[in-house]
Amino acid sequence: MHRPVVVDCLQGGAHVICEKPLADTPPNAFAITEAAEASGKLLMTAFCHRFHPPVARLKQLIDEGALGMIGMFRNRFAGPFKGIEDVWFSKLEVSGGGCLMDTSVHSVDLFRFLIGEVKRAQGAVTLLNENLAPGVEDTAAMLLQSKSGAIGVLEASWTLQGGVNVVEVYGTEGVAEIHYWDGFPSRYKTVAMEGWEPLPEEGDRFVGELTHFARAVRGEAPLAVTGHDGLRAVEVIYEAYASAGLQ
Image (tube, rainbow, N blue to C red):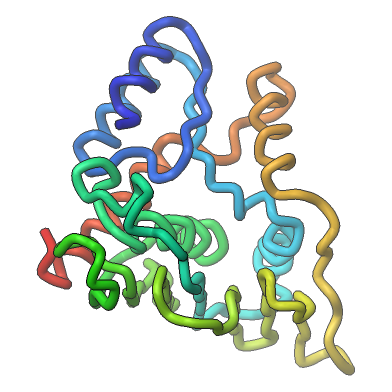
């Protein structure tokens, strides 16, 4: 669905910010990135979580070495989605997948942003909602490993009840946790600290995302999220699908 629209816009001379996932398949995502390179225009994948204030601060802490060597990344984005069977992103022929493609594409990008490039990926999927078509997973998990050796455990569901939506990073010198929608504080601590310190919560990630894109278009900042980032996320999801027997 994205490929013809994005390519037309790029070839027409427009800079483009494209919602995730960049495309429904790796070949379509690659074609979009090739069109962007040929056009000389900016292509940004809308990975809004990079602009979530606690995530941005956590990235700084990791880059500064405050948490030491990172060994584990854990993420869960899951909860019941009423009426999911009636919306377009549960239609395989349109979206390219189920909750992994819809939700875990964000998780993969968070792993790449915070931890590093993915070396390998494995997935496990199941379908609990009998109203969804076969081949569209509504509950899934992924196991990632970065080139540095860090491990990522990612969980997603459109069907399971309750639970905590969280990003957790564990290092040899510290730990951080970022909470979404559950009332718990986002925070971090290191072995040198007496207790937990809060991570900043003020600011809207969607506003931050669009503000950054506008600044990049005006030449005020380099693009922080590219079409290549969108391509890599789709490639990793497809690697997980293949290991789960869906591709």
